[in-house]
Length: 262
Length: 266
Image (cartoon, rainbow over all chains, first blue to last red):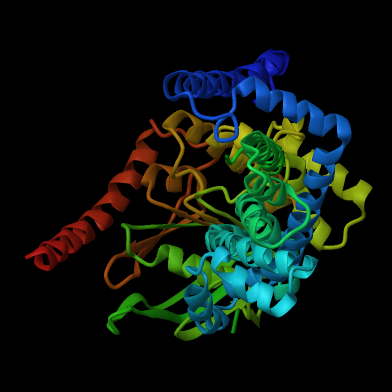
């Protein structure tokens, strides 16, 4: 609905949507404080929340945090775009051509259950610890959600929309595809891109834990090696906050594009 | 071959479906029907009488198993923008606004942007939705959606308009209003209309001729011309007489088809 009333309320709505996260953060900090108070762990194992916040401030001030975020994001974005470029056309073809789907689907189903993390050793063997190894792992993680949502998006198109397109002058496959199939499948494709960004974000951290000299995953594993739990926790907090932020961004794009269907 | 003046000529059209189990279902027995240019013909009958099958064959969305369907003397080879269609479920493109939906076919026909905008707005005006041109489909009620779909079908200026239970999902009052609106547009543009409906009063209110069909297998039972002047008042005796006669044709068939369903259930 786009009544003036709801537009005026949108500022409050944003606040309303953020509020649960504020509560969640307060809850997590409270539990954290309680654990520290009860078990009194050593600083290097579990520091106070304030210590972590202080270190976060230091990493921001020195610019080191942004270097790590930049490294992780660059890897995820390149792999995610690469996955989209391959998976979306493949998914569209699978959704439209049943014989092609019968051919490709078993291959997809066999490889899909293998976690992208299980590909990390092979990625290191094949590509070393260079950039492409990590991009490869994220590619595996982002490819399948994008593909599956695209196939589902095409197959779920109401046949009556196809018929409407045909009787309104889309006589050939090409025009029908451009004018009806693609726009009708788009919301599902966007959903796939949103989900795959999430899986890619999880996969890059794992890949960087194992084989990297930069990135948020490296920040965490490095913190462990030098017994700095505050570093580890800063990395974890930033991963969480960025994950939520990107998901919100994609939801926003999705709402704009899915014509009130969602 | 199609006689002069007949827009649609159907000769021995039949449709047999094969179920997944390999059984064959006779959806439509060999059927012959001619529809004159500018004529409004309704297909009435119980579910499974093949009326929608026949309509889809005329649209070119379904190939007949036997027989020949001609439009202006030429065999139907597939969907064509010269045969517009209105669907029960509206089938508006949700990614386009109202104007975009009505312009869709015009754009496919290659009509220039400014001209198609003018034409689309004109048809939206005739269904009373000019002020809703910028709305999205999901913001409209069912009745409004169907008015957009009607405007969309008429806008490309097809010679034939096929309507598949277009008002079937609407409440009685909306339905009445849309029937009137459809009649007005039809009288203005004089398209050949083939109209599928479950509703006998609706068929009488709108049609020049009513084709009464029977179920399992689907075939034409009788054809009745409606010789009443528009606007037709459903409370008059002559209207009631048509109703009585058509229900009599249908009731015999319904008894038969219920008996058949009873057998199937046993």
